[in-house]
Length: 502
Ligand code: KIV
Ligand code: ZN
Image (tube, rainbow, N blue to C red; front, side, top):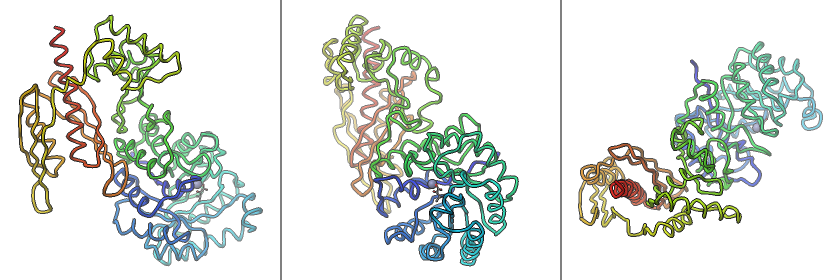
């Protein structure tokens, strides 16, 4: 089965989001992430626009990424010349084809549009550029003209045609019909580019694929003009999970890429945004948390790890005993049934007053009702960490840890300082408490050499108890070690409390 190509336009159409402006450095960071994510094409911008756009296109080209790098140009020589100057080798040319645009914006006849398009395609090709061609406002263009236009253009030696739903007016059934019609007259691959004015961009993109489109234009977090473009993460997951169609996207990196783009564009991600929103795998309602704790698929369509997220049980007005108990245990508190009942009542009472219960508040309520003091419960503590690393040497880390009141130290080597430090901790803990690191994820939350790194780990003991833990620090090694220590401490506490009870 052919994979559906992902053409990412976060850096071009996404940057069109009102209020967003990216520096060339920001664009380079995002391009690197997109490349690692696995997109086939990255549209980096419009080099004719400014010195910064030219600089960013050039620097992304110099990076030698695996993805094809595209730049957008109108059908005018100046735009093509700027793209040639930027060293970008793939050009996305566009011209509007709807009568509305021809009459009011371009003041051009249909014939003129065809003739000019062919002329510029020839010009771009004669300079070695590979062309993808869009008919802007295609979905409001007279169908017969659109078919003639795409047929003529597609026979001029271009790589692909793109069908933009520029103002998001399509429905899935209309999109399906349109792509089927266009497919009947062109021999080159077809791409779709859907805007979200009616919240239909993802559904319309997928309908396009169902009708035979080989590529989707998308943006991270659905960024874009007005209501935005089809969101990469939603299209990719829906194709995979609901339509059994694969892409090249490494889905485990979606959350991290989404966070990075949100930070650099300063556009917050709505909590309830599908796939990458912070609530996408969060559960509060008692019936749900009970179900999820028993078997996650009861209230999750797929596992959060698939998209780089983690499951969260959130205390609140609708919480039940199971969820609060699990949450308290993950904080290291083990109430009796009676205490648990009191805690749940307290959490609900706060909800009635319109208050949201954070982890810190739950911890306080838990401590008050159980009389347990979590601060005394650092069963494992880092005493000392030192790493040695260099260009021509293997990294070495030595750690000193206090575990159940006794000190242990270990030194290990690794491919880098993080690997060495994690191995050293594992060396101590795997022998003594049988805790294994099951997952390790590093997320650079900001750019620059002083970027804050967030490390998320999942640790597991020998009977399958798993705990996730996060830690953020400007020093990646410290963040990694802290996250591991927090996770291991949670496992140790759980073991200890179970032993006390039994
Ligand atoms: O939405 C649109 O029509 C576009 C074109 C430039 C392809 O972004
Ligand atoms: Zn667009």
